[in-house]
Image 1 (cartoon, helix red, strand yellow):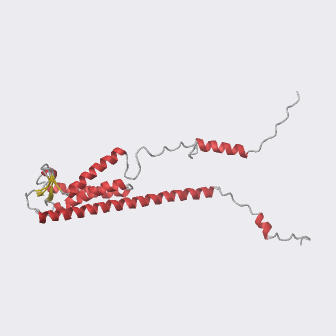
Image 2 (tube, helix red, strand yellow):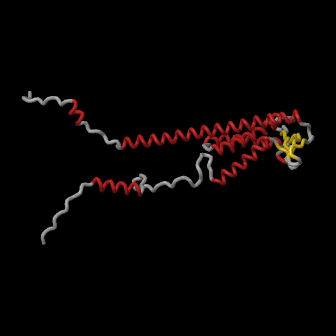
Amino acid sequence: MPDHVDAATPPEEAADNIVSLPTDNPFSAMEKSLGAQGGRDGEGRRARRLSVTVLWTMAVVIVVVDQLSKQWALSALSDGQHTTLLGRALGLVLVRNPGAAFSFATGQTWIFALIASLVVVIIVRVSRNLASRSWAVALGLVLGGAVGNLIDRLLREPGFLRGHVIDFIDYGGYFVGNVADIAIVLAAAGIIVLSLGGWEIDGTRAGSRSTPEPKGADGSQTSARAAGAAVRQGDAAAPSMPAMPAEPE
């Protein structure tokens, strides 16, 4: 047995002897980086959910308004009878269109039904990467217009895939359209503007992405500003060495 035993260290002194880790340790930097990445991912998910909601809301509104307006035209207008609204520029006349705009490809209704179905499938697939509300509005207009006329071709007389589209808005005698056609034209104009402006479906803009910094030999990102700061910190932390006396000659 030793003839001398040291007294137990008081709790106050033991607490003083504990070495605290620096707040800027690598683990803290990792947590901050992961937290920032998680925040960006959360914002991206919210933007996608909002954009998809806008797309489907716009599409549903267009379909409902289009079908209600067509039902009104069938009940209030007579085939071929013109009603003036704004002189010769705008009027109402009920037309059962078996083809496309300007009565193009009459008798080939089934082709346009298949094209409209393909457009719907493409928009649904594109919506997975949608994070722009402007693109959501444009695509919602396209989707609503395509579905509005597709319903006519599927369900109206004379039969499935051969139904006639109900047109009733007369534009000065040049052509007759409906609400779905208006939505498609507005969508085309919006898509042209967004494409020319460089706005992408994912919410970014072409040319606005920052150029990645060059990587070092070990694959890590380097930066001239960060390197300069590190040099300055190293100079400040390095102890100053006393000047050595010159040797006598």
